[in-house]
Image (cartoon, rainbow, N blue to C red; front, side):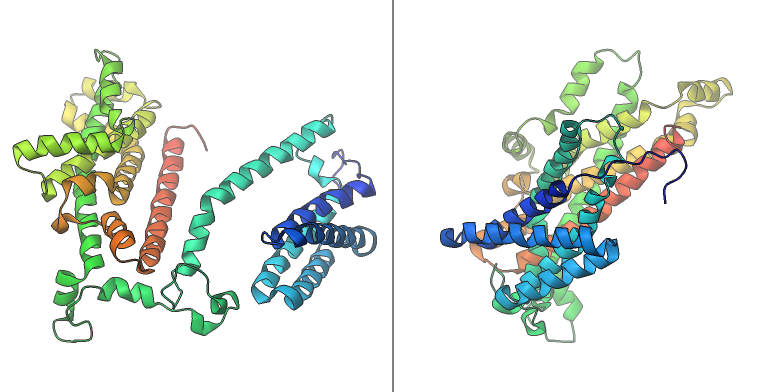
Length: 412
């Protein structure tokens, strides 16, 4: 049902409705051959034929999005279940569900609704082709994360999917490696009395987690304080040599970490704080400060300077003006910069390799040692937890960014 005066796109010819699902089916069939050269062409032709037939049935007979999705989902599920097993059939069923909707979306011409009526076929192709390329890049970037998640629940000490995992057998999945985060290094993990003290003092991963949070929190506090004050000073028009100073302060983002770590090691060795918590905290503060400066500087772009001048004319001192007028308005940017500084410290390993010893070993350093000395899927469990923490922190950063834009009147 179209609204009055709404643009109704023309319906494409039947060959158009068949060719695009057919191409996708050919690519899927080619990938299904998994490198078997004698089957690649056969599977590609078979995939093209099946998807083209499904498209024809959906367009000519079913003509409803729900029915088309159920039909494609059912056909692909049971046909693949016979030859490829349960795991692949579930994947194809999900593809079939989306295929049914996409086929009718193409056949109705709705793909043109987001474009001007005068858009040519080349412009439409580029519009969706560009988004498809971006989607492939995004999939390429998150593919390792998608693989790590299920592997962390593998009951076997392997970095690959077992046959039981592929068949979704409950016995093939376990929390074994998440428990190992607690038990690894403990003197007697089954002892009830003194369990907490044993965990806190001897468990290797718990000690690394504790060090990561201690170093991350204190380095974040230092970086946030220095970065915020530097950003406020650099945002003033009367500040001399602003550009050289800004370039110097954000140089840790540009200079290779190996060079920074080596320089800090020699300097901290001379002053006696190498291989100490203070040395690692200061080094991570140096790395996190540029992120705070950039974030707070971006927030100060929309700050109304007349507010501070008005506060000064009413008798407020610089300190009161900062904490009661300026700080509440730039607080989202400050918190965002602090979160970036914390993430930088939490994920950093190059500086820790040179400046820390066993007592200051952080999670990334422990993971690095585990890969070299003691290969264990516990690393996958820890990586999963780190990814979840990073996602939560980045979500908070995005929410704070939107709140900051609303406070500055950029968005509603």
